[in-house]
Image (cartoon, rainbow, N blue to C red; front, top):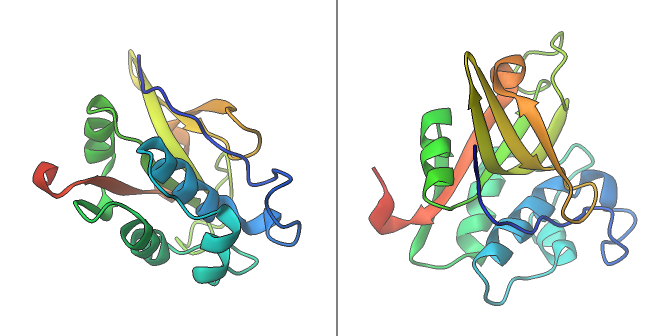
Length: 167
């Protein structure tokens, strides 16, 4: 098992505007990942407004854009594979992970979440099953372990790492 020390936040916190809460998983993931590194991170509400989030959430393109905009200039944000995401966890860096059965055209599937951003913070490799440990964004510090195999067709990953660490 590999799990990084990480404080996830809640999109339902009293500090998040009530009208944003249902769709604030993307901004909450950005906030959680950037807070992991410290520094001056804008609020979830500010990220939500600047990213012009909609009721269905935040696109992968906007996740990359706003990690870059609000993050450390010596870091890059880019799309990645599951293998790259696991290497990031091994290096102690959280990864933005998106469940998306709607825009990926997998609407008949039954993933853990239909459409939801979460920080990926760990994994467990068991015999023939990879389990991913994620912050749920539902409650502060709450984590959940999910099956990679059962969700892989709807998952995508955004890596946030130093430019010097790019493959």
